[in-house]
Image (cartoon, rainbow, N blue to C red; front, top):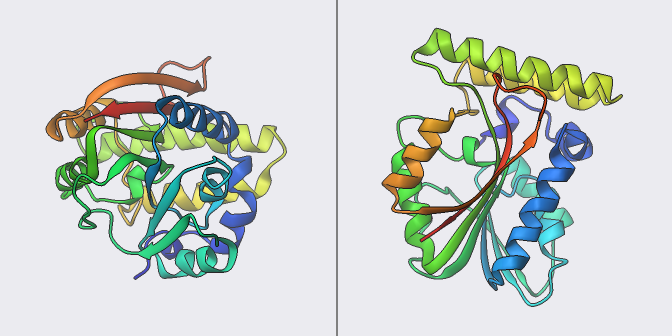
Length: 236
């Protein structure tokens, strides 16, 4: 099955995504939160080409199941990621089930790729089901401004990702700017990139019975009306 690779060049993504505006700061906060909560059994949703997976593997004493549905991304994972503490799984985050097993579920820029608007609540239920009691969901993701309909969503997407493209170019990262334009097209056409506004995301977590422990906006910190890159921690 193809998901991300339908709209984004996988090789370019693998080489450039770490230059995405606010990505490095987001990842550092996610890793800090994971270390703070001291969980050892980890499920990574939407592992992609393994950029975040590699960083997870540097944490001593943890065991990781890395889940990815896109066949091209999964091929990258198999080439790049190996070790006795990692298990690569080609599967769907909406249906993958190991009830009560994981101390932490993590998602790095993948929450919006793992479910459509139609099955987002089912996805939230399932990720919570995979957590042990007291387990945490640590997610880094993009949130766009609130919208009421498709046209409002397109406007919110253009405002947020237009800023991200501009910021990437200002930072000298033209390749990731191009990837973000491809991502914008996919999001507008609702073909694999299902960016939420804050109330939608909060509804999903509440529906799953998860309690918010932590929220931090990573950036932009000088723009209040276009959304942003966030890190959240929710607990079962």
